[in-house]
Image 1 (cartoon, helix red, strand yellow):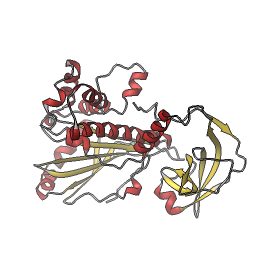
Image 2 (tube, rainbow, N blue to C red):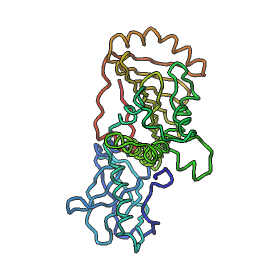
Image 3 (tube, one colour):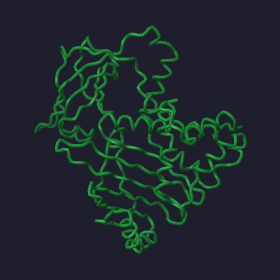
Image 4 (cartoon, helix red, strand yellow):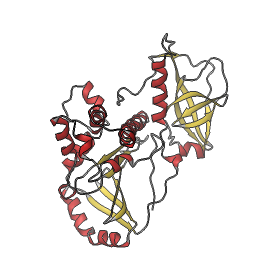
Length: 356
């Protein structure tokens, strides 16, 4: 079971000297794609790719001069210095995994393989949403659950008309992103989605595609945990989770915040919501929240009637936000599909800001 505090599955690392390590020049285009900023500290990992040694930084492969003193798996911390040509990565420290008698054991190999599979898992993003659609969570899935787990499942399913900040917070805590952390710190919280999925695998009579769906949900959550951890290492915040309802399709939520810059100015929060139902079609809402609590919103609605309904509700939205001390500085409502995001920008730890 993976968690935010357990995801580094490599052995304890021993520091090495910086001898023979050299600065790396990164083009402006690549630096922009992988989100490098001046004075940022990033970690690179040496990996073998097609017989060549590469340096992986923020999931991007960079050329690495072969050096017998380094091997695949070694990691190097760099400080970023921006230049007119792009960015310069200046090595700070080098760490190498200590040899372990069990490093080639089948158990460690399976752990490493699973770690890499989750780290580079394609962003399907729809498995939980399909499973938690009203009527999909069938009784056959939960008939063997104990009363506590059955009650936890019922409590996870919110009502759209009763949505509140507390309900969103509850969905966030039950998302499975923090389960292991809560267990380690002895924080008493209700059963989360990942724990519930594991219970379903153990006690329910599921097989075939149903069993595969449950396993996929667990993988999806653990992949999101890795993404959150990588963002944290870059001094950023990035959390994906899903909020299920009994009277509507689930809503996918992603909130993120960039790293604090050299000017120490607090960065904006970016919150993305995606909902899709038979009545409203596909709808994306992006909100940018400034440190001054001003909000800029962009809504993409594929159906014209949904866009018109949103325009009619704009004044009500502005009043509701004001009740929470927030100011709606800008609202853009577009009768269009949300712009497609290139996969190169969706790697763990990346932050994408779509300008309209």
